[in-house]
Image 1 (cartoon, rainbow over the protein chains, first blue to last red):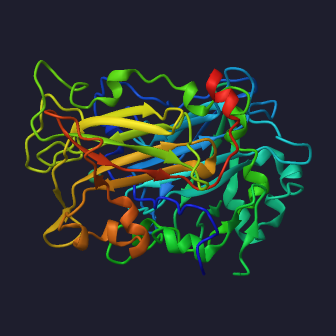
Image 2: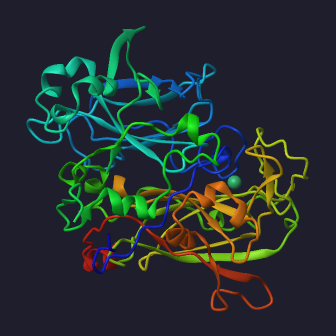
Length: 190
Length: 255
Ligand SMILES: [Fe+2]
């Protein structure tokens, strides 16, 4: 297969490695520069907490992953003034090695679409980032009508569902990521 | 044409074969930890029809994603941003280049973040136990926002090679980690920049996982034009993000 006419080839990816916290997240070092991107997204919509574990192929909890999310706000918009729908968390942020975000539940971006959060996974051992999506357990009716979700293989799309619970007055979603194995998370190629 | 190929809204064509020609695989036997951590099932292609609605849309009316982040000037100067009264030890260098999209157009307002080992090959990170000295005047992290030409410029110290546990007598080539956040999900890139002539490149399974023709793009080039007289050698590292995005030039001029 030849190069596409007139297009520059992309710079190849390399792993984020074990030491990304030096530059990208607050744990691991006392970085006097602070960080550019934190683990909270503020905007209109229902306040939610999002967390989960990342598991490797042996079922062990990954302790050095970097998780990034990108999403619309509760009105399904990316462009409300002041809204930035992008955040990062490592999984040193909680003592039990879960990643953790405070954000808002997104609304559907277009009518007929289910609400979702885009997720990018980076870690030592991943030569290039992995992309997945979170759909919500309390939105199954719109999930099965969603133009992306509905095309995914039945036996794998459950891996994209975040489970809703309410604890101590907080709405929490749990979304674990399995890099391999029987419950391997469905990953996308953009 | 590969039957996986698909025309996206912006006219670019996705094909799995193209992708595999430019990117490392998820699992690469010589890089041990990839075997436990890289996805084993085939990726599912997400048609660009739906990526168009990612956060790239957010910046349409409001300059660029990078405009949302504040980056102070000292943040791109690693020679000074970790100083506790003195300069860091090592060879000063300038690392500069442009962030471009697949059309060769500048990606304006990209958030470019770097992190690296010090001149001795040691990171300021609690997990790094390499028996080499920390430098009290070097943090090893910096960031900046690409300018209207897509340009960025960092001042730093040439990082040292360091050992790792992948195989017997394994050493990482000298490298600087790069994180680039462009205007859409497809323009998210994490990579590493290497230096020309490093004998460790041929032995490194992380660099070696990239198809040979594409791997050359990860090696910076010495550039006398970037070199600053009496101060520091210059290395050029241009970065091409996937995808294209029409950027009205008038808006740039005013933002
Ligand atoms: Fe490194």
